[in-house]
Each structure stands twice: as C-alpha cells, then as structure tokens.
Image (cartoon, rainbow, N blue to C red):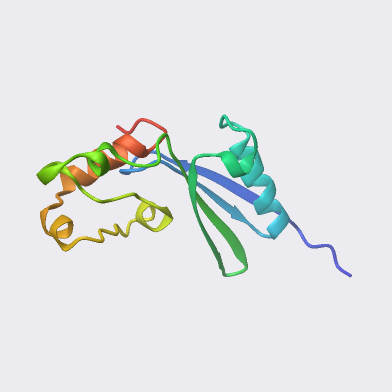
Length: 128
C-alpha cells in the first residue's frame, strides 16, 4: 500500500450576499475533521444542533463542503401578512443561490432588495 497524502483547505467568504465557509479536502476524514473544527465555534449541544445549511460535492477527487451559518430559520417576511408576506424559508439550495418560491404570486413580486433583506436576516455573520 502506498501512503496517500490527506489535505484540507478552509475558506471563508463574506463579500457576497451570504456568508459561507468552504472546505476542500482530499479525503472524507479530512472533510469531516474540518467540518467538526468549524462547527465547534458555534453554540450548540452537538454538531446536529448547529444552525447551518450544508451543500456537499464530490468532484475531481475532492470533497467540497459549503457551510452557510444561520442566525434564524425563517425571515420575518415569512410571518408577515398580506402583500408583505413572502413564503420563503431558505434551505441549502436557496443558500446556494437557487431561490425557491412555491407561490407564483411571490415569484412575481419578489425583488432583489427583498432577497438581500432575507439573507441579512438569516445569515449569522453581518454582511457589508
């Protein structure tokens, strides 16, 4: 058996509309360790309790994890009434950039300002 070099790289991005951590690892165990290192900084009982959306990709012999820390589950517009309500509860896919709006009315009325406001409300770290 030949020894396989295991490596990982961690990145943090805060210059977009949402904050995220990116983990790139050459093997599953390195990816898991990086995930545990990141989630250790968030208040919770265990990693299953951390408010975070996760997208994972395995491509070109690399594991990639996109971790989107959150401060709340749903934005205030979800609970609003009438015209101010947007039935949106961003999950991992939404945090990754594909916003799911189940009602056609919401799809037709949502603006880029609405989406910026939603991400500012739900993302854990302040955005510039």
